[in-house]
Structure formats: structure tokens, C-alpha cells
Image (cartoon, rainbow, N blue to C red; front, side, top):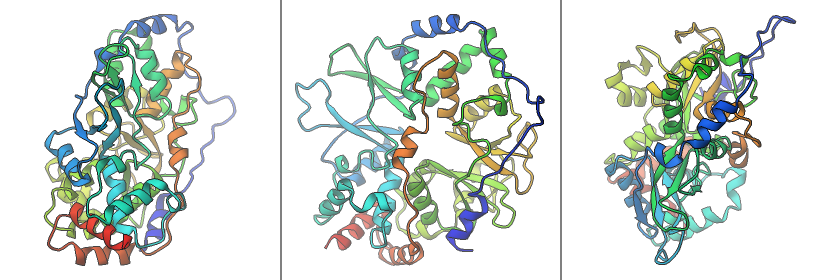
Length: 420
């Protein structure tokens, strides 16, 4: 089955309808002032969950990849060479989504590029730098267009966090004090969701709100009945990387090619943690089924299929249950199964949508009347057109070039060859 066919298995829209007058109303508090007042008094700096780890802008992208793994962090702040005496010493961030975007770009540079990359100055700069054999990390910062640098003042509240996250951002850097060049660390979207989940244990209002099922939450960004980005078990790892880069997503569903049933999921973090330290490039031509078994074997995965699938909910799942599953699985998104039970048991051909951490935080933003909620804003901005065929030729060629060196170093060499 080719990549186009694999995508068509699940990139479909499933519609749903309710008989007139049978759809229950969502429960919302009659007065949200208590929540607004409470969250307005909670300081963002008290929710910091990620340390600030910095690297110099001129280090190589390979060194930056190694720094991500060595520091066991999800994001690096890139320090400007002109940082002394500046109020904002960082030029941007670098995370696993950027790693995936860079690896995909280098591996497929010799084939037709997606439309948005053809005249992209960032790609041109990376290609030019590759002629020297060294691509500085500053050129790869936010290559994924999922990882912008967002900064909040030291006295910012939880409401400010909700406002930023409801625009699709995944992490925010907090100042040590107003106007200072020092910073305390990051608040991630998952960190805020975890805080809100804990807060709900003492809030009767949120406990009632958590009982609402997903299908009754009105925000359109909850894609319960929308297209799903997925690949089959016989896709290669490079296919999955390319799909995530082209579609601007951080994970893809892994499905049965014949039925479309959800088997597992893989993310940019899963891939980077395996590809970066790998001694050769053969992992890129490994099938997704093999890769899932390799990565998730400690969690009970055999032959590419989870023994206990944990990546799905369904439209009738309560919001509270969905939040708990997002946190328990350490996932940024769950896949929606239109025929699954509330506990997530899967049937065949039932994959119908997604719900993400940002979607859920947008619900909280809506609950306290934050304006301009648009969790799909960044996704629309980074939407890519589908690349033309040729990824298999590129992957095979890459495998031959990568047999004796790490994929990151080999891909820099690949980009260098193309640039010349």
C-alpha cells in the first residue's frame, strides 16, 4: 500500500447527527466570576514545570539534538551571541518538533518540496549553511512552526497563560522580574492542564464541568468528527516523519491498513529519541510497526499493536476522564473512536477525530470568557501542501548514505550534497 493509500484509510470526515431536541445541553456555571477571580490571582510563575536549559546559537544542530536528550528536556532556549546587556537574550526555541522538521527536510531535500518550503528563506539559509557541513541551531529554531518563543512577565496570571495557550502555543517562558534579562523557566500546556486537574478536586464548579461529555462541548476546535492524520504499520519511519512535518502535527495514529482501526501512536519525541542517538540511518527505513514495537515494548507492545491501547477516547467520554488520560499517557493528543466504549476499548474502523491538550485548555479559556480563542491558528499558519511522490526513493538513497554514521550527521552531509 503506497503512502497516498495509507493516508486515505483515515484522512476522512465522519459526520454525526442528533435527533431534534435530543442533544443534551452542556453544563456551564451560571456565574464564572469565582473562577475568573481565583485564576486571576494565581501566578504563572507558580506553575513552572520545565527548567530553562540554554544553548548558544552557533552550536551545531547535531549538538543541540544531543543536548535535548542529555538534559532530558523537551525544549532548549537558544541564547543570542549578543545576549549581554539585552532584555531578551534568546532568539528562539528548539524542540523535538524542530528536530523532526530538520531531519525530514534533509532526508527529502532532493525531492519536490511542499509548497510553503519552496521559497522559504529559513530553508534557503539551512541549505547554504550545509555547504560548510555545519548547520547552526539558530537556523533550525521553530522550523516546525510549532515552537515560537512566547514570554510572559513575572507577575502574569493563570488567565494570561490560558490566553496564550488558546492560540495554539505549547510553552511559555516566564521572566524573573519585569524588565529583567533573567528567566525562571517554562510553563508548558501540559503543566497548566495538570494544575487545573488538581484544582478541580477542590472545585465543585469544575467537577460538574468535567462531567460534560466531549460531544457536548461547543468549541469547533474539538475535532471529534474530522480528518485524522495516520499511517499504516507498513509505512516507514521516514514516511511518518514526513507526514508529521507536512501536516504540522506532533504525532500520528498508527492504524490497521485494512480496517483503519487504531493500533497505537507515535510522536516526534518518540522518533527523535530513537533516531538522534542511533549509530546508523537504517532506523529511517524501518516500518512503523517495527518501530512501535521497539519504542513501546516496555509498555506491552507486540507486533506494532498495544496490548492495552491508551490513546483513544470517544465522543461520550467525560471531559474529566479525557484530561486524566491525556496526563496519564503523557500525550499531547488523543484519538477519538466513534464506536469505542467510554473506557477506550477499540473496535475496527472507528477512528474519527482528535482531541488535544490545547483543545482542552481552550475550553477553560472559553469558560472564563477569554476572547480571540483560536487553537487552530498556528496549525493553519504552518499548513503544508502534500509533497509529490518520491519519498521512497529518498529513503532508500538515504539508507545507503547513512550506513556508517549517525542519522543527524548523515543528514547534514545529505543537505550539503544537495546544496552543492
